[in-house]
Amino acid sequence: MTDPCDQVSAPVPCDDTEAWDRVRAGLANRRLRRTRLRVGAAMVTVAAAAAAVLSLWVAPRFGEHSPATPVAAASAPVAESTLLLSEGSRVYVTLGARVAVIASSSDEQRLRLSSGTATFDVVPGLARRFIVEVADVEVRVRGTRFTVTAEASSEHVAPRVNVDHGAVEVLAPSEAGTYELVARLGAGAKWTSGPRAPLPLSAAPAVSATPVSAPSSALEVQVGRASVPGPSAAALFAAARESRRAGDLAGAIRGYEELLRRYPRDSRAPLASLELGRLKLEQGNNPAGAAAALERAAGGSFPLEEEALAKLVAAYEHSHNRSKCEAARARYLAQFPAGPHAGAVRAACDAR
Amino acid sequence: MSLFARAAVPAVVELARVLRLESVRPVTLSDRELVLRARAGDAVASEQLFRRHHQLIRGMVHRLLPFDRELDDIVQDCFMDAFEKLDRLLEPDAFRGWLRGIAIGRARNRLRRRRLMRTLGLGGHENFDPESMLGNGVSPERGAELLAIYRVLRSLPPDTRLALVLHRVEGFAVREVAEQTGMSMSTVKRRLAAAEAKLGAGYPGSANRESEPR
Image 1: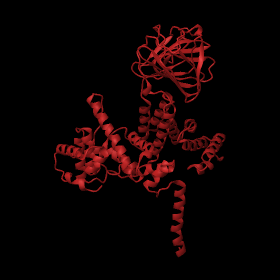
Image 2: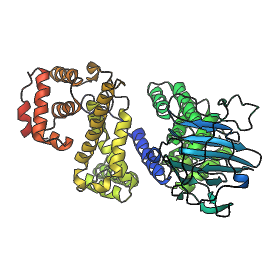
Image 3: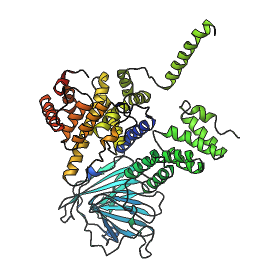
Image 4: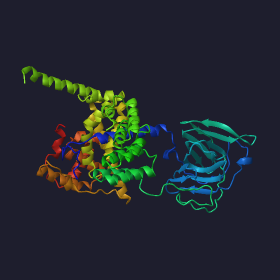
């Protein structure tokens, strides 16, 4: 298979544009990952169940914070897993971590992290509190994404909290026995604690993980695997790209759509949205679908936002949606008045 | 067309070209200039560096790792590494050679990882079809040499394979192979000798390439 860009065996013109777009997107994603301060695999400590007590605050827990029997537990001894909670919040559990849902009521949702690292993506605007217990520390959230690590040894647990976005409060038991605020963390902030007493993770009652599509009426909290074992985001992206190269537009579209459905937050999602929009425009029979994908690509901080916006204008023009076309045109020209597509964008949206 | 018009047309064309270039990208700058501008945050300069060297790097990686399904990702990673580390390039004039070194390093790691996977029984085999690598314009003699080389490649340790491809296919002098791979000259020579023994000899001049300019 001769590489079309190979200068030695087949010196033919090679379109570098797509490749450059990927490099730009890749650089932006690398920078985004570094600034997010998310606890990744490097910070994961796989721990066995803790036993002994060693705490900075010696007071026992009282009242509403008394230990409760876990309702459901999930551990990921082999691979990462995702828990989907009934209100739409997600918990990403890393290898070896152990998370249990302690309680769920109209007032609060309470989970316990006994070991390892988990990232909590909490739906904003919930009426009830969302609380994560780690050792005797509570992390309370109000619509945010944060990561908690329970770095556990055989005798103690050292909690760590990193906030991706939103805000969390960290509370710990005082000498009086009540919980008091020890830290309020905003986006990018982190909090660490010394060794603390672990809380026992009682043997959970036998609860089978319920598939998302078939909620159990017996449980108020629906815990299931949000991501069915299947192809990775990288595999889906590569397959979609191969389909496009082979001229299979429909196959490429299906591939990108599946990637976006399964991995909406993957680093490839913005580029996949852009590619999906381009393909649907190319197909010609679904400009509205193209516009939807391109809106997604143009919606965030993305190195290819300029191109996504330009294509969005074209998509609305093709779908004869003048008002949205003009809105997208204004948006493009406000951000990229001298952009490479400015000329074409200015001429777009006129009534035909 | 009058004399004046005949003279004016090229001037107008040149002016249009200059204007267009200045509004699009500085295509006439040296690597050194582009590196300095890219370091200062000039995205157009970064793009021009990429476009100038992309085909070269992609071709080289393709020949080092034929039929690797992740070729695009590997090449992409090479350029991302380069742009992230651009501040560490002491001699901006040497961008091309430095970039090639990054690509060779990536290819080397890839070969080693594949070999480890094969050793552990976890795959790592490549779908090897050297015949289809030959494109138009390759002479029969050169084609035969390439085929012979690539048939032997599969059996070689990663560093030996790397040295052989860089020397035989890419045309690197022994000194340059040593510089790019971090191996000593004597090690490179030893590995090339072992590889060429496997090739069955018959390819003259291997010892003389050290003095050939690159």
